[in-house]
Image (cartoon, rainbow, N blue to C red; front, side, top):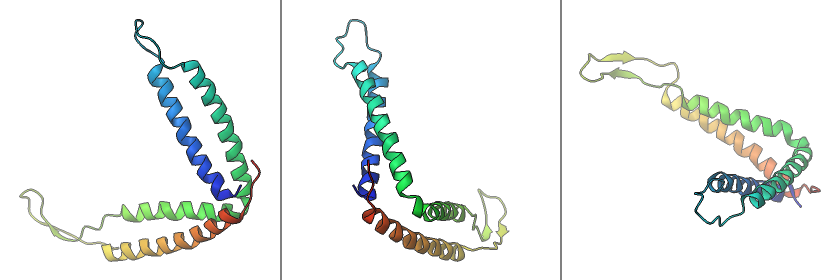
Amino acid sequence: MTLAKALKQKNRLTQKISRLQQEIQRENSVRADDVRKIKVEDLLEELEVRVKELIKLKIAIFVASTPMRENILKLSEIKSHIVFLQGINTTEGKVSNYGEDAVEYTVVYDKLFIREQVELCEQGIDEIQEELDKFNHTTEIDV
């Protein structure tokens, strides 16, 4: 199986585990006079099996993606940098709040600069993601 398919399978498995966990939490306690429609013990057994599958799959993905680890880390840091940039206050000019006297604000980095920096980061993300996608679609893993 390709790394790309393994990543999709990992996502599906993670969703399945989440659904099983929610169902166990929801169905564990029922009124004493209700007929239990779901065997919670079976759900817990299935959950344990699925978690073991997920661990095995994650290990295989981790090992196979070693050559791209630097790009994966760069991608993460660039995304974090975008979040940081978008959080910079760019309030500029005269601003009055609720009848108070206007206060004048100045900035070092204006909205335009921030937008340009985010766009540069997004270009970097696109370049790295293209490399990762190519790698993921051509790399075979054993699961």
